[in-house]
Image 1: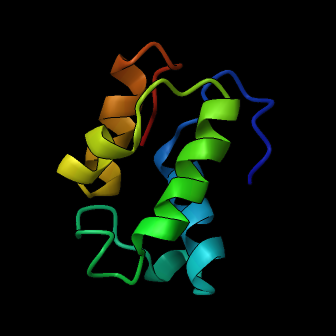
Image 2: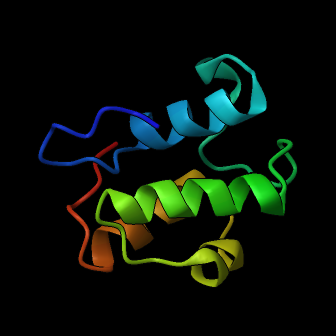
Length: 88
């Protein structure tokens, strides 16, 4: 996963980098307002993301994120579940 030494580890930039890393694409190719499943993410990779993010303090789980599968929604959700506030 990505370095989380900043006080806001769940920024859109971090989420995009993490998804791009898993999908083997450039960060610029990951759209923040498009369904992540339409971009190539699958449930197994999403579970890996959730586990890594939980290790970094996220409280949102797989089901919560799957209900709103865009990075914009995830940044908002991660900021409201007790994790540090995400920024754009």
